[in-house]
Every structure is written in C-alpha cells, then in structure tokens.
Length: 518
Image (cartoon, rainbow, N blue to C red; front, side, top):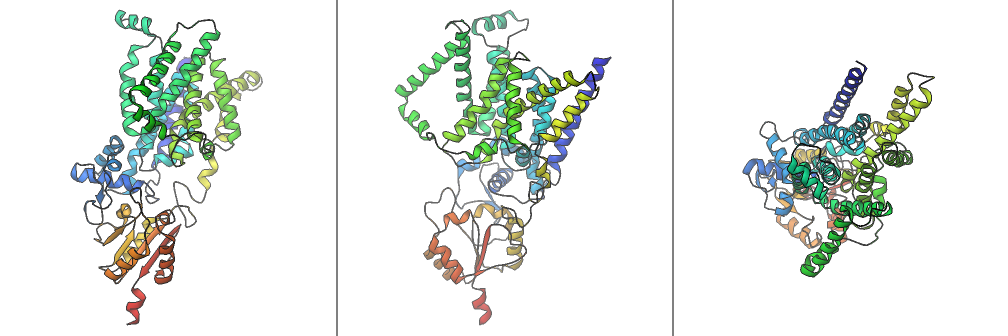
C-alpha cells in the first residue's frame, strides 16, 4: 500500500510538472513579434504549405520569393518545418500558431527529461527533478516559444545520445538466443540498434550539430578504455577495439578522402576564446556556481553512491565535450542556440546532485523532523532555478521599448499606416511577413548571400526611380550598409520618430518633405 501511495505521488508530481511546463510554454505565445531567423522559418514553412516545395514565401506579393533565394536555407530542418506547415491547414499563420509546434515539443521534452533522467540514474525522483528543471528553464522556455528547430533538436539529440549509450552499454536480458549471442559476442544490445539509427537520422535532419556525437563518443570510449586498463582488464575489451578502429578510420580518411578531411578541419578553429558559451550554459540558474557544484556532486553520486559510473561518464562527456568544442574549436558565430542541446545533460547531473543532497538531508534530519524530505526538495526548487527571469522587463512573454530586439510588428505597423502607393522600401526582404499583401516595390540588401554593402550609388539610383520611399534597417542590418551610405541617409532623408518605432532600428523616408513644399 505504501509503495502504491509513493508511486501515485510521483505520477501526480510528474503531471503537475507537465502542466507547469505546458502553461509556461503556451501562455501568451504570440505576444512578442517574430525576430531574427524566425522570419526564415515562417517564410519557408508557409511556402511549403502553399506550394508543396521548399521555397520561401513572399508575403508581400503573395507568391514564392524570388529575391535572394537560398534553397539550402529553405530546405534546412524541413523535418521540423513540415510540422509547422501542417498547422496552417487548420490555423492562420499567426505568430502563436507557427510557434505552437515548438511549444508542443517543449512539453514533450519535459516528459523525455523525466524518462532519460530516470533511465540513466535508476531513480524516478532524479527524473522528476530533471523534468522540473527543464519545465522552468529560461533557455528551454525561450526556444520552446520560438519558431526554430532547436525546440525539436534538444529532445532528439538527448534521445539519440541516450539510445547510443544503451546500445553500447546495456546488457541484453531478453529471451532470444540469437540476440543474446549477438550481445555476448559484440557487447552491444541489439534491441537499441534500430532506435539509435532512426533517432540519429532524425536528429541529423533536424540540425547538423548532431555531429557532436562523434567527439562525445570518442572521448567516452577512450576514457573507459583507460579505466578498464587501470583495472587490469588489458586491451581485450570493446573500448580498446572501438578506439583502435576509430584511429584506423581517421588514418584511412586522411589517405582516401583528404579533401573532405581538409574541409572538415576547415570548419574548426584551434583554441579560440568563445567564453560567452560558459555564461550561456548556466543562465538557467539563480546561482551558477551552486548549480555547477550540484552537477559535480551529481556526477560523483551517480558514479559512487548510485553505482552507475558509466552513466556518469556519459553525461559528463555529453555536456563537457560540446562545451569545450564551442569555446575553443567551433568556427561559427557565438549563440545560445548552438549550445542549448548540451544543457540537457547538465540538468540531469544537477538533478542527480539535488537528489543526493535531499537524501543526505533526509538521513540527517528525518529522525528529528518528518517533513525534512519535502522541505529540502522545496528549498532546491526555490534556490536553483532563475526565477528572477520571470520578473524582468523584457523576456519571452513581453517586450518593451527598452528591449534589445526591434519590435518589427509595431515598426511595420507604422510603415503600413503612413506609406503611400508606389513608394519603395529598402529593407531585409525576409521580414515581409509584416508587410503582407502590400505589393511594395522592395529593394533587398544584406544577408548571407550579400558580397557587397549597400552603397550611396544604389540609394541615389533608387531615389531617382522612386520619388518617395523608405529605409527600415535594424542595427544588425547596418553591418551590410556602407558608412558613406549611412551618412547619406542621415543627410538626405528624414529619420522617422514614433511611439511605434522602438528598439535598435533606423527608419528613414525620402521625398516627402520635397513633395509637401511644392
């Protein structure tokens, strides 16, 4: 009876955590406007919905986009964007509808964190702690409330990583003699072979960061080979065999496909200093140092107290290897999104550490205080997460004029209200969602395909072709504008001012003053 009550309480706790995660992800999902690459995904998802092709949709003209087309960009992560396209069969393409796929994946991830935390630690309470940490995670909420594939990649990589570990380390306990023999000869559990393959494919289709599994697995295997050697196991074990095969494979690649190897090495930099990633991985926690101490204690507890050293080593490798790669080796712009997937493993380690602390508190105080378990759990829930985020002026639920991101919804609302027929618009065309159906003559500039910055001569040519027009550019867009062109805009155009124009954005208009003076 007591076991049934305990089981019922844990099920109730999980349901409450799932409900909390769902409310935090769906509440006011469309409050904030699209930002950054969300525009790319709404364009390509809606384009696929309209035509069945992975071509960006131009909301301005109501047809497939022809300005600065990029097939690779439109097709990227289509396993995620296909789901978004299906939503448009039932709902209009609003911000909330488009982001709902990410929110659903976020709620599923809460459940997945519970399952993986439980499976790797052997403790359901660790799974509950891990699920709770993700349910209220600042990073998790931001990406689960954004139209980007990272909301799906986070759980898919976590499942892929866990399945690969179980394939490599789990003992087959089924009744099949054939499968039992396969496990005895290879040390691999064949039940996980197909799930690992499928999860790996889906993860890779979602994001190329799936390639991080190679150094993670490599570091883990080499580490375990050293551990087995120190135990006196010699070199006749699967860790040494896999390590040797990996080295031979690398040598064979250098010999047979040197161009591809050089291309791969060209995607890396050596010992760069992208230390901002260190801040990204701990921004979910009120006291980052305390969170790191809990994670370290969690790894130690898994290895020693829970007698799961391999699971501890896998979790540490899965977190530390991507972090080290991000800080010193990745050749890409720094961004929270690129390390988000690795935060799952840190959360599980922190959950294990929190569980170990609660156990210690219970053993020390239960004789004197029967509620010590509940009190210790509540204290951890209060101290660890970054609750202050929910009270910030700008967050994933609301945005004010002091926010770092431009409010394109209001900016283009001002443009729609004040522009006249025939006026040209100089802006980044991929944001055309916010001037849908206006059929504005658009001059697109900048972006990943741009080789030259917007020049004075281009502006002068546009002004001679169109007597009146607008320039709308965020501070990031100005990276694609020459300094002379920026000076020209300040000198020969009127900078617009309005309560609707807020954030790091410049709005200019030309030709209006001259018309009014005639």
